[in-house]
Length: 457
Image 1 (tube, rainbow, N blue to C red):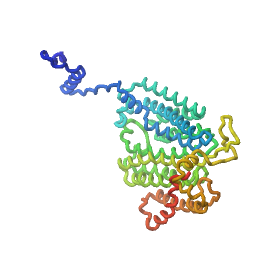
Image 2 (cartoon, rainbow, N blue to C red):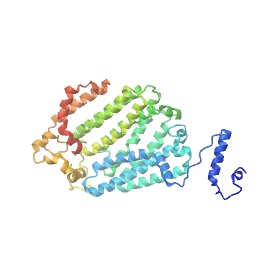
Image 3 (cartoon, rainbow, N blue to C red):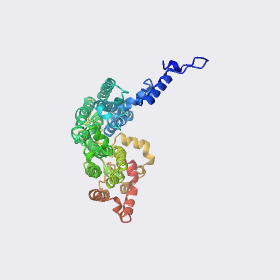
């Protein structure tokens, strides 16, 4: 009767739509009674909104980042035997397979944490707590993405990458997720689960995971990185996490100084890792040099500012710096990794070169790519006619030059890390370094190495 009373009795005025009348009545009823009425559910026929909800359900950003972390291992290990087209095709398989498996893990994680997400301001509008996606729909989506991702990885790399992906999903959903409300050490388990995807790329390329240091170097890099990354996030949203019942070390830290103290050892270890990788022969010595830049920026503009004056703004900045830092370090690893490839005399049953061959050739697809694309811009190619001059301009990072004297490079490296470690251990700012006393000397020594940092492989 309420709706009929609104209809005009005379005239040729167009009838108002049924939806507009219902909406106005609901608003009027809400205003009259003081009862808050929930918003009308969004139109589920909108394809964009459906895609957006499933993207949020799978934590698309995190899943993409996990998939990207699997690429460096494949890119440095696939070799010339696959050719450039094979490299691109294999990279697509590694990325898509890892992405789907990561998405499946994130969906299961949100299904398990639906009630807790509803109690957090940061997560209460996710698709499951709001009912935009039902639990059965989420379960089907998780099963489909896991099956497709595992099938793709099995197809491009065999059983090992598929097994690594399934192990990652099991550790993340069956151990890490329940542990988040039971022990603050869940970050340690989560760091392992979050680092396992880097092994997928190596395994697709046929690298024996337990016979090579390179996979575990990247694994260690990502594991160490996750502690300051998630500690900064946990401290920033400590009220929300505590309300939902999660247990993490930073949640009891009101000032932020304890969180900074917990992050400091990991920052020091991250700075030392490029040197260790270079010394062990996993990468060229240029990784130790070029790794200075992201470590210095991450430490100075991320950690140091948060440590000096913890606040929401400095914690957010510290967290955001960690995002680009990991990508930069993995990119530099791809540039400077020294990977053994057979010259072709020995072949496995699948046609790949043996990883245990004594015939080592450091030329791979990266060198070929640079020769074709970057030759005209690389100062090292210009100076190949004069090895003496070239040797003075850049250290022998890839075995191009027979002379293995890297004393000048090591001297610069030692001086830098002496500065960095003193600062890290004493907790003082880089302002304590006299730029007039040291800055000019370092600038003069590093200017000839800038092109090496940018394009030398």
